[in-house]
Length: 163
Image 1 (cartoon, rainbow, N blue to C red):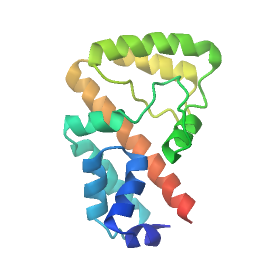
Image 2: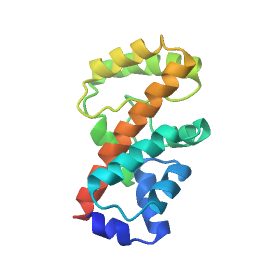
Image 3: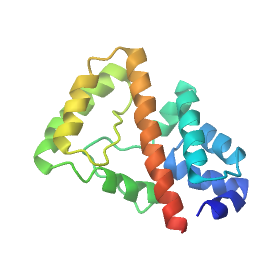
Image 4: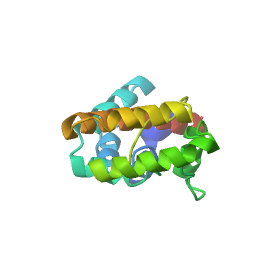
């Protein structure tokens, strides 16, 4: 619930936010902007913050995301959410996604990120292959957009869990 989130200590709010986007800069800024009048304002602030992150902060957030097609391990909230988000990956596509992930990481130097919720494995693979044609600037924009979408979904889940 938003009122509970607004009332948390800065450290508690940042810990919750890190489960949604694993950038300390993101968590610190969004926590510092509290209180939020409604969920829409929180989501807007989170999206704006993600899109304004320095690239090193984006890379920090990416480090918490497993490769598409790999199952996140562990019992953390983030791992459970990741497994749920990637539930559309069919076993027969895992090898193709692994190959695509390797090519993407060689090209861009970081994990391929896509908001997987609601996508099939085939759709994720098609997007990966399409994005391999991006230049560095265009791909960074795509990564920020995907990270913002994932963060939005996870914030909505976080506040739904608190209700």
